[in-house]
Length: 152
Image (cartoon, rainbow, N blue to C red):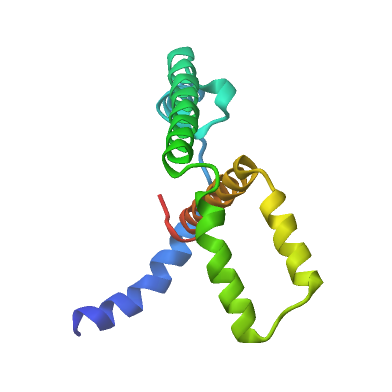
């Protein structure tokens, strides 16, 4: 008899014998120690309120630093480009595209004027929000994949 055949014959028998065995609980002292050890080593997977105080403080400082860095970079880019640089670059292009498409009229002009009247920092904020939502989408996909397909 070959090994695969013997394995196929023994597997159901072993499964039946093991499933008939009564379940046994671990001693209370062992269970408590294991649960404390798991909780202590996996603090980062728990709610933020269960994190150790130094880790929470470091996270808040890092978050504040990233917000400050983002605002500084946005201000530097805005100062480098100038407040009307985007409008000056887009106006001829949009006008040419509208002319080529045969779209003219006061409605398009009114929409373009409305777009130009939006403050630049609102547009930058909308772009930043869009980028953050895009990153959040990838984070949610990664969490879902890890939850559904990766066994620990």
